[in-house]
Amino acid sequence: MALVLSLSGCGVVSRLAARPADAPTPTPVTSQPPSSGTTPTPSPAKAALTVPQARQAMQEWVGKYNATLKKRKWWRQNAGLEALFIEAALHEGVIERNHETFKWKPGHKPINLTGTPTIYLPRPEQQPQIGDWFIAQATYKDTKGHARPHVLAFFRSPGQPFKLAVATPIHWVQRMPKPRLDADGYITDMDNAVARAVAKEYLNFWNNKKKEGASGYRLAKNSYSRKAFPAVNKGLYVAFAGHGSVFGFRTADGGSFFLFAMVNDAKSVNQVLSEALLVPKGSRTIQELGANWFS
Image 1 (cartoon, rainbow, N blue to C red):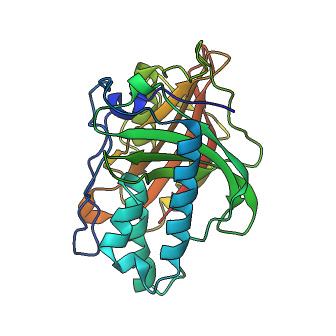
Image 2: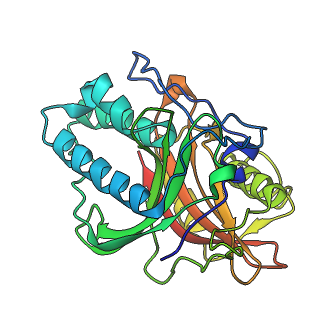
């Protein structure tokens, strides 16, 4: 049973406090994870979230998610969206409205879990005062009907249920790295400086504004982004305004794992790019373990 991540990453890396918009009516975000530029402050008064509780919370979320998808035009119901999603995941719900406009099929599919999800949980004292979070690795079918591992990050405000912040399938040839555990079995903090640089490099790459490698890191030659950008850029592409919370941890071999999603400005919600990334120890190359383009 893997415990997880100390999420200094969720708060330390800059985050776009996005307020997704229908075209053109804005959809408010009612609850959000830790603000950017801050380190989570211990909250000793809170009851510690446990792995079984996190796993149960995910199961409950999946049940509500599947029930919501059965509702007619669920993507038009703000309360339903806000009960399930925050950040980039909420953007995906809003983009479903564009699918309806263009007479496309909904991009979200029911989730039927295979096996028991692996939970990555930060130390209780590392949870931010404004809520709790965890990462899960779970196997279920992707939008094309193929069963594959996915990695997801959940967050809840005090007294509220967990909501999905970001999710992506893992590429077929990749796998989640083993985390570095501390003496109590929790995941150790990721390198925040590397996290900032990696997120910055992805924004620079996709927005094509700065010389590649300006952050000190480069995308791997075989990355999903390198292959996808030429085709995507020919379509209705809107530059990314920022990214959501960056979740991450140190890997067993001394590298760094990161999970986050890039989103548009709230006035032009057009696509979401979710990324699961690995920077090996001593390397300046960003390897893509998983990615999902939702537009």
